[in-house]
Amino acid sequence: MKFSKRLASIVPIALKQVADHFTIPENFTSWPDLLKFATLYSLIGAVTLSGFGPEGTQGLGFVAAIVHWFLHLFVSMMIMISVNSIGIIAGLQAPWTLILSVISLPFILAFPSLMIDTVIGVEEQEAEHTVLVYAYLQEVLDILHPAISLAAITVLFAARTVTLTKKLRESLVHKVSTEPVLQTVLPQVPHHLEQDLIRIQAQDHYILVVTKAGQAIVHMPFSQAVKVLTGFRGIQCHRSHWVRYRHVLQIDVDGSAYRAKLDNGDIIPVSRRRYARVRAETALKGQFRTNNRGA
Image: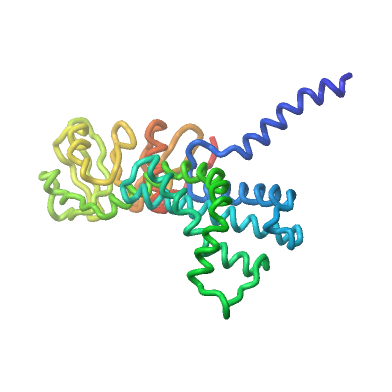
């Protein structure tokens, strides 16, 4: 009786752990997370399909069948993700990006599918008698119906790429956009400080302006300075600090406090409310690293 009660209390916890591990989050935090879930779901789908022994892989061993279906599922997911991402970067809106990825799937998948079938040994390539164009069209027709099923599975991953790709698009736009000359928005900054702005800091009715070439005190309210710096790729990371993203090297997490280390050696605070934004923007440039030191 005690064992039954104990089992009844353990099972829901175990099922929740499994569900949490295999459930795709609403918003991926990074492209590696997306790749991890695509690989995991491709493997699960490959093992499941191979267990049913479908006609397409009846002549293969169980391991070879798993490899065959894993490659098809994984490549399909990568195609859906890629087409969806390209559509978003090009400016298309949902659901058109998903529609485009579903329609294009069989036509793009036909190429790798031919190679996979030949390498795995599902089909023998008759190069002497088969015209490449004919073989491609035949493969498109053969996988048209399965591709619809694959699309139903992989469309979830394509949909989950929206947030990541929008961030990527913003990053690309930022890279090609031109930031203003520092002295045009802050005329009081001496010209010998040049243009490479790192950060500003509130000091009563003044602000401390720090550049790669040095620093200066300027008579201007901090709130007004933040407004005129909207053309720069940076953020007010704290109530009295503004920082340019490109100069953030890492963020140290010390208990409940966050501190950004800059490439000039300065260390400035980052508020909890703005931490996620700083992390997201600097991570896109490959400059983010968290050093979790604990309390």
